[in-house]
Amino acid sequence: MKTLIKKIAILALVTGIFISCNNDETTTTQGNVKVSITDAPFPFAFATEANVSVAKVELKDANGNYITVFEGNGNYNMVGLTNGTTAQVNATSIEAGTYNKARVTLSGASTHLSNGTVYDLTADASGSYIIAIAPALVVEQGGQSEILFDLDISNSFQFKGFGGIQLPVWISSIASVHGCRFNADFRAVDLDQTGTISGTVNNEITAEHVANAHVTVTVAGEEISAQTDASGNFTFIGVREGTYTVSAQTADGLNGASGTITVAANGTASCSFLVN
Image (cartoon, rainbow, N blue to C red):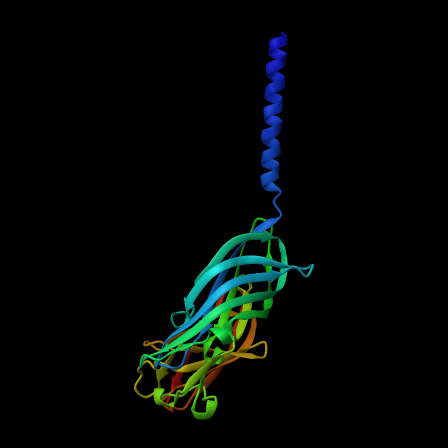
């Protein structure tokens, strides 16, 4: 009888430990966060690479503390990350809550031109950048979230002419370039709370797709841009809910076009333009 009681007691103890472990697993206060990076387009066909080196990414919590979500050596050629293409920086777990600011630390940058010229911009790029997250990143307990960092490389990589004069964004001649400076221009969003704008630009007369057309939309007072691919397609991701004016302008001087579009969270709004 004593042996039976002893066995029951041991079984109860083991069961209690098992239940306790299960409770610990189900009462986690953390959520999973994916950190991604993309860019606004580079309008310069002569720039084959626009590289940034990310050393650290931190998110600011409600108590004012910065929580590290990535630390290492992430190198990205931003030229290839356009029209909705992203690269994953990291995936990790952090405390559930709302994060409305980020701090991104870069350790270097460079750009390569098609004539073989390389500008090492490490001295300009190295440092930390504080970025507002809008809409703020919401991390739910046991949930999955994604924060997107969008680097506007046409504003970040600033080409210079003779005498250090900054060249206009849509320069077409590599012979005009005599230097480059770097000043990071980021935006950050909770990707799960934003939508997508996609569309096509065609020539109204020939019906042909228009490549390299410059398409813009103003989000929260800031203009973000896209560039059509060889098939005339463009895509914006990480666009906040709202109604926007989208404009298309071709590089070869055709008359531009614009239209109004409404974006919903987790939805895709489509629009097409005919230029002539």
